[in-house]
Image 1 (tube, rainbow, N blue to C red):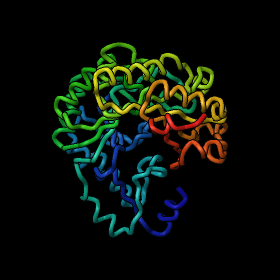
Image 2: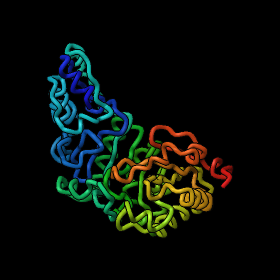
Image 3: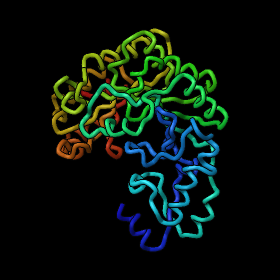
Image 4: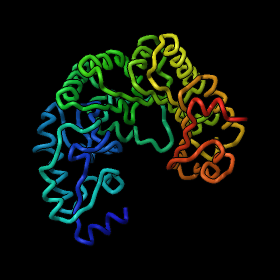
Length: 334
């Protein structure tokens, strides 16, 4: 953040890869068909368009994306989220001005928020604030059809099918996935779920249509999970993850990849609970157990995760993540 302020003081200006349609998965079609320029847009300041009022093309050519690009070229941040956005770049004024008309309607990937609702109340989550910015809680099948057409027409290759809501809270998720896949059979789609609402045959069928499913289960026991994921149910979440693996195996499918994503706090970073998580991951036969060092809330920060020899022996750390693949799960000597 300070380097960006320094760049502004030095006379540089800014441009944004997401606003140029060149980012990875920052542009998000929200549940009410508005479009946000970033994945953290819980306060609505990053909304750049509305597909109920304008076309995808107009959003980038003459609408909010263009206005945001112009603001950055003048050295102004159109949303507070710019200060920590991974797609923001600084450059001399001349270069930035040349880039104003350099945009693509075909980003490599986008986010799709089929629903903004969630059954959890995680510490620090901005879901409640975000709901105040939505005119509609969930997409209709017609909405998803419009999104599928945009993806098809602009050859978008990847979708993150989640944001701050719980995707499987939607009763129509099987229909939504069918709509996306029928028009875009080669589309790579990943999702992240807390697992609790993956609770019937239709939703299991929908889950099998993804390329990757992340299960966000932040603890290996009910007590540690609910300390962060208030309202959580470990048994239901873990059971759904295990059943999805079993169903994939029974069908002889190679996908979806199924990953358990476990946030590590100072209350669940003990050797005992970590070993329990590894044993449970073995039992469920997931493709990867992904330990992620949590930074929110700050009082939950785990120094052991970053510094202890026990954690280092489990596997190398990349950024805030230690990934233990299926073959690693079988080899770890507990």
